[in-house]
Image (cartoon, rainbow, N blue to C red; front, side, top):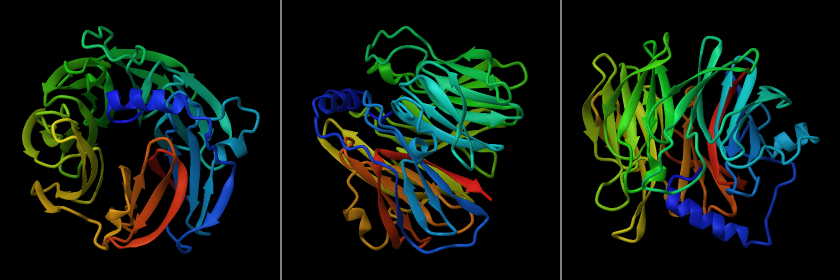
Length: 376
């Protein structure tokens, strides 16, 4: 789902009037050069326009440098509506690939190598997925897509068995829970309250992994979204702000004390951590300025300092309209940035060297967003 809920609903109305909808058939094209790495390649999940059932799955093969589009449809020709409506997260656990399809209210479970469908788990308004031992944990908004400052339905984290794909429990958290992290026998959940604008939630729920009960809520900032754990036992949480007076910002939580210990004045729409570097990109909208502010920054997770205000060093950022997704290859340190462009047309995936020079680019499906690496 798009980051700005109000803007999203506007886009839905816009796309519902479009007659020239482009849907990719399976295609392949070579980009970059072949590499011998510990990864076979990576999957890219395109969210697709809300209400259009246009979420698609792409794959980049490192051994052949071949980029393949819309591979789920090719691997599963009998599945109706293909992946479905709004691909919100993708992860690999064991030999399986899990795609969270938000507005289709399901988790598609596939073979990680062939993308053949194994089954699905039905969870309403599901958002993000993480794993521990034999279980998967999924955040759910629980209620319908509806902007309402008095929205009463609180969200929850669903727990399902990865062997049977059966839901075994759920834990109530805050309003509209988004990303989650599992660490130190706890689950940290960023509660956004995005449907309750301007009455956003501002907490991180802490769930005891063993009892699967919420222990506490940490007050952080309004409209939380992204969460990542670093190598120093610190949890990094991104606030989207309120798009008016409160800017997007990054916060650091000490997971030993579960207290906010610092903040960094950088806007974050999406982020990834490799080593001591937190890579952030942002498409921050301001109603006061009536403009988008685009960010490509690096934060040192040890010193909490912004070490780069623009990791793209060759001017390619001038071509990017709406930076949306970001992922860094832990082995090669190549940086992948996706461009959602208009949110209703095909996007672009850019690959940069560790030094920030563009290596290649390729056209994707609508709203390219989530990347996961497939190990050999």
